[in-house]
Image 1 (cartoon, rainbow, N blue to C red):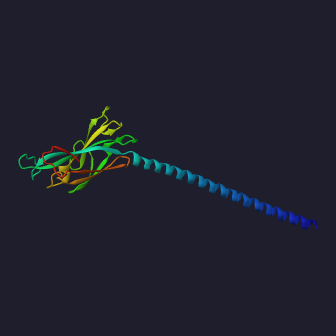
Image 2 (image 1 turned 90 degrees about the vertical axis):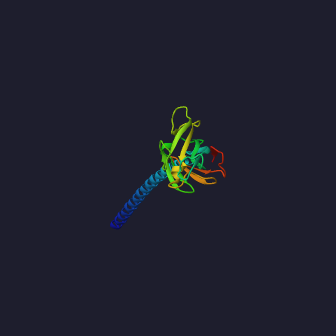
Image 3 (image 1 turned 135 degrees about the vertical axis):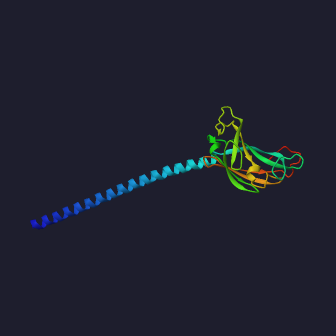
Length: 210
């Protein structure tokens, strides 16, 4: 009788130890799973915050075009100025730009401009001289001499593009009625779109709004 009771007690003890081991294992698995979930949640939160910041920068850190004008000159079939036989042509596009509202400082030296015109499509980068592959930047209003960095809401810069050089061999500038699509992208990835449209008549003009 005593042996039977002792046997039952031993069996109960073994069952209790087994249950305890299973319980401890479940607690460890739950703890590990919780740790993984916490780490994953933290990673996702960090990524979402970074994505949100990048998205905000791409929307807000943009350049605003205040106005655009084209320089009108008389060019002959060789692309030279000819006051007698030349045809009125826009040989240069100038955009007056400012920092967009709520934008951080914008460094135009790291910006790009996609030029999509009637005769060619190309991407321009900042240089001291406006030519076939570059645009230049000059200041109109810049109290702290920060050009080419728009670091104040009061800054006004001129972006100059050489339409004659960009147009390519055998084509000189932009003619009456032609249009150029301009896509200016800042270092933040923010994009400003501008359409420069040449008036239907350039007769007797030295400069026109585009």
